[in-house]
Length: 135
Image (cartoon, rainbow, N blue to C red; front, side, top):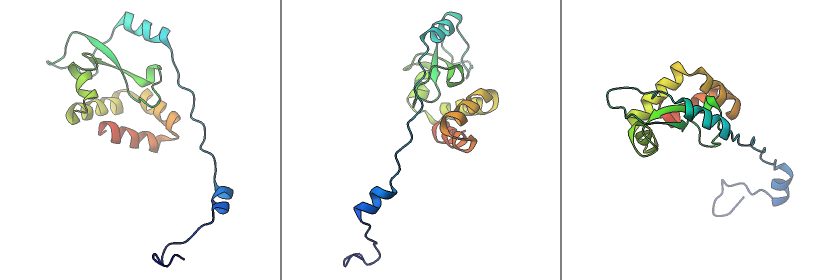
């Protein structure tokens, strides 16, 4: 025990090294320029479509870590990353993020399945959506 902190337990560095486990390697990031090109060529409709929508739509990555280019990690939003709903999501507008979270949870089961696979289970996926989108 440490004199100044009697409730602190001292652990030897040898024990720390013996008990240490390496962090698992994260899965590689999926880059698919062909998918992005095809989706942009076809276009889409804003997931939060309302009277305030802009004419321009762009793809938003639901999870940016990793920023996988797979359909289940992409959602159409009006505007660019700085305008429209896309800009408001990127600016962490709580109201718009909560609306998007509701859409992801109720209309996009593929997103939840993707997140569960990527993050290690349905509970972690739900926690991620709650933390990121208030869903």
